[in-house]
Image (tube, rainbow, N blue to C red; front, side, top):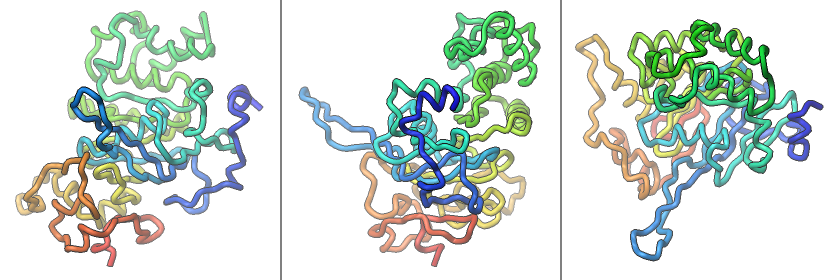
Length: 354
């Protein structure tokens, strides 16, 4: 039993005996990560002198999916749909309100939601995050060496010449020169800063990396370079990604599976090729139609209400009801749950699945 197992031994269990029935998209293999009924609600308080809880924002509402080793799951949707909250909740940067998150530790699985905060530190070596803004995510008072080596120092994994060699090696992997390690973040472009953030996330060789809008703040040409880098690192290091983006066109090039989110829920989950060739949920079709096309004969799907509904006061039934071009009266009354179309496709729409 390694040090990580020792720290978490009271909450590690045999996954084969406790497998949860969720959407796997990959046969009967056991996943690296399994999320079941994950929820995160943020309370709303009144503006009166005596603060009173008057409701909740359901940022993540009953989310379930599986993620397999070496694969990439894309989480897509408009701003405010809960994508980032899902990623941060899985990493326990935000504590979930309900649900189960199972993570593989050498054929033994641990429920991340049940780990006491004092015992989260050893798990951080296995799960890391790449942040959206390469400018604000790096400390301007620290050199590149200090930024990238900080996780190794905190966890006591290296020091001295070994520390410097590991930093230099990781900088080379992400396309930066080792001599850059003594410079400060202001000396780099946005794309180079994001490479530094990637190096920091990968320096401890994690199994799971959450990429939170990792390319959205970059120029288009640099976006392609960073996406290619992430794909190369995935093959070389055996990484597993959760790739969060509002751009469904970008996730097509990097993701194996895509989960489309709307108002805190997954409304469609499928393999990438299946989703693009056979989108079934009206919201997925709306997202795909919004991707610019050089063909003048392709038009956007007409939608009178282009804004998200008030997420603090969602209507009953389907939350996409007010924007859906094919809705019926039943949609406003019936809860829309994910329905299995085939082994690779799940949709939360009672109309398109009939």
